[in-house]
Image 1 (spheres, rainbow, N blue to C red):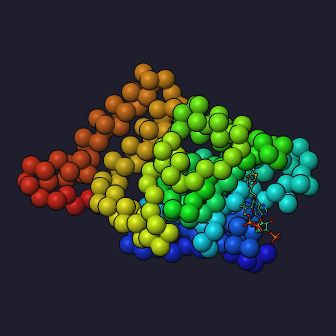
Image 2: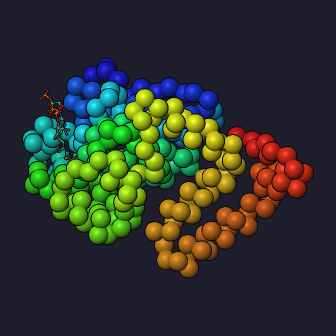
Image 3: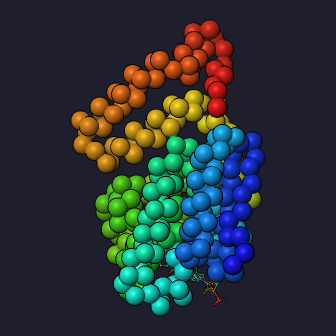
Amino acid sequence: KNKMFVKNKIIDQVSILTIQREEALNALNPDVLKELDSMLEKQISDRNVGSIIITGSGEKAFIAGADIKLMMGYDVDQAYEFGKLGQKLTLAIENSSKPVIAAVNGFALGGGCEIAISCHIRYASENAFFAQPEVKLGIIPGWGGTQRLPKIVGKGNATELIIGGHMINSKEALRIGLVNRIVSSEKLIDESINFCKELQKNGPTSISNSLKCINNSYDNSLVDGLEIELEAFSNSFCSEETNEGLSAFVDKRKPKFKK
Ligand code: DAK
């Protein structure tokens, strides 16, 4: 059990987490989930990391889902625990104070699609495929698919995907808003890194506050969400970051934000 399932590489303060279980198309078992969770936590608290990319190893799959062979033996309690583990991870991704980008390099199915939709942004390669095929297996999405997908692609599109269980390609995923951008396979990681480097020039606190407020937009009523936005907005006016950003504009220079 010494095998590492998640590789980490940091390039220009962009942390790339690669799931390495290519022989099973990067399917997720509890060990992979736990490792990804703890690696993610480390990257979020690492001052030398500005943003995080999650991807899968190989050219075929991002993540082909939860490990079906393993789930076969589960009873209700084990399924509950497995479900909870994935929900903890997807919440950690979504609530990350640093941007998390899914670089979807192939199949993103079931739990794999759910990991992708818990990320803040999705870049997909031309050969990416998405599905929530759980109903074909006599189960339902268990890591937030029924909750997050409608918020990203709308209720109608989400319902079609979840009760239809069919696969869609990256073009269709782009059309319904499931992915932000399509990139060629060879350029997927480089383009994702380039985007991260661009956003890392922006104020880090402004970014984390924005992510928090965006997440709050569906946890709260409009009035409560606006209150949280107003708090974050006004509080930033005693910060060095805000001072630097506003002064740089007035001085006609590029801002230099502290990490
Ligand atoms: N789990 C385990 N092994 C998998 C796998 C998976 N999800 N997907 C692929 N593999 C394994 C295959 O079994 C095969 O292993 P060997 O037979 O060689 O030992 C190897 O990866 C290569 O796959 P194939 O030979 O099948 O490759 P193909 O190119 O022919 O097909 C495919 C690629 C992606 C179309 C096919 O592998 C496939 O259909 N895979 C299953 C995709 C799928 O249905 N994914 C959704 C899984 S369900 C919950 C918690 C979680 C979830 C739900 C509830 N609770 C506890 C509440 C989430 C559910 C899911 O994710």
